[in-house]
Image (cartoon, rainbow, N blue to C red; front, side):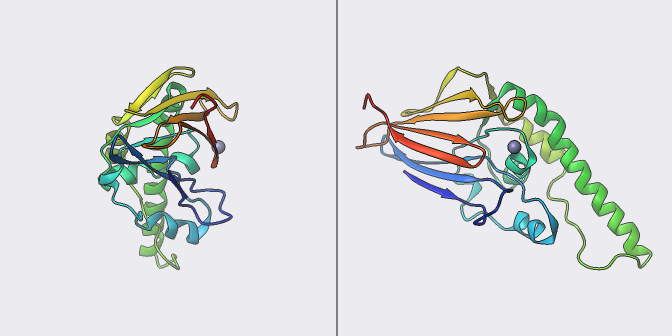
Length: 204
Ligand SMILES: [Zn+2]
């Protein structure tokens, strides 16, 4: 199992974990959270950086909660070619039906404002960038597969997901994943808000 934190060291926004496992002779690659970097020009540049992996090669995404610093770049990932399912709790999905369109709207509003000012010669510095459109948000929302707390779902042979209530915001979850990799004892991975804990299952 290879776990990588793709945000910059010491960063509190832009939460993304890349996890690679070998299951039944096949490599699987998934992400836990895919958040937006927030705060200033440096954060904006980070949001534009390409992923170190091809989004087409990702099997699925697991989302712990709806805050934009954990979910806000999903429409960009989907626009760049990710076509797989995005798993989250039912309440997180309901929140994202509001938050992601709002995020796209705010980005376009910022850009329009900057363009208006630029025409009047009152804008200095780089133009803001709209990371994705409302249409791309709608396409992303169609990829969600909501799962209720306490229900166990097999995401692939040898990998099971259960969401447990995390008490952070409505719908937030600790993602508990049982992973049976080839040639190793079963492991349980617990992920929440950018933290992860890995342990070997007692019954393995
Ligand atoms: Zn949060």
